[in-house]
Length: 178
Image 1 (tube, rainbow, N blue to C red):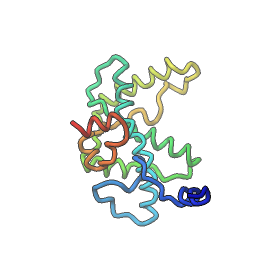
Image 2 (cartoon, rainbow, N blue to C red):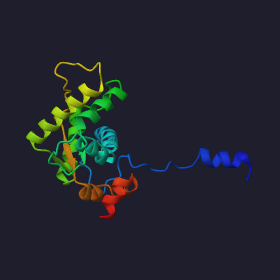
Image 3 (spheres, rainbow, N blue to C red):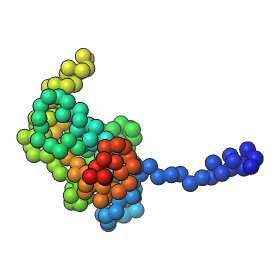
Image 4 (cartoon, helix red, strand yellow):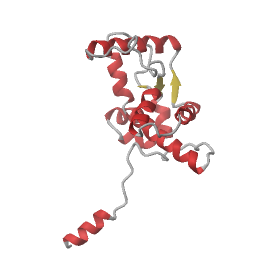
């Protein structure tokens, strides 16, 4: 096969889906207009990045030496939305769209909002960690607006919604095999 032929095949190959691609859920998507569905998909993609690393962040929180009453799979949609706004220079979907994605997954049983006391305790430990680890970090009292926007991922149900997460990393592989 010639180099031109090889190049042509690579250049025209269909992209392989990633674990972060939106539109791969097994449950029905909300009935939205084409424009609103595009915004929903963008938020879904960003949230999936956080979901893929939910166990990793849960381990980080657990390593603080406090036994928080969680299953160890944690996400912060507000942090995700902030990253989306940074990446789009503020021109991305409205916060209500991210809230719709979170509510859709919560309705499917894949996400559960942590109790207020648990959220407050973890938020307090987030601030303490930032103040300890980042010498120049002193905004107001050290909190960020998303510190109390914490959810717990139900890995079994999340795998029902997104079976392809089993290929995301070792944490999801283990969850899929249990």
